[in-house]
Length: 119
Image (tube, one colour):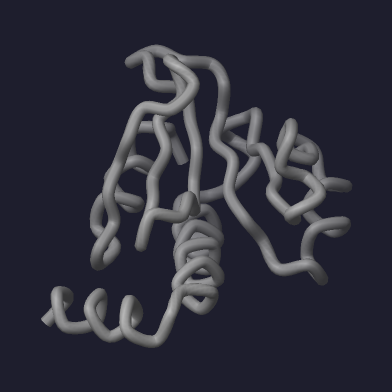
């Protein structure tokens, strides 16, 4: 999946916001917490980072095109450095799972507010 398509997927999640962090990183957030990161420049080669389930972290980082995300690997984030490492469906599913993991860690009130804004 190319980076622009991945950004569109992230923008479509209920309650998702985007913000520039560290001067050149585009962060996708929900409830004020990050669920995906990528380069802010239009033609960035940074790739995309996102949270994964602890059980999948080692599996994914052993695959070509993946590596532990800098500074966030201890929180089970991976970096997809190569856009052809995944097909569109698998990338969309991983981004959805990252979003879901972050939403699950929010307060029940925030989860309700996000759910209400989605309807």
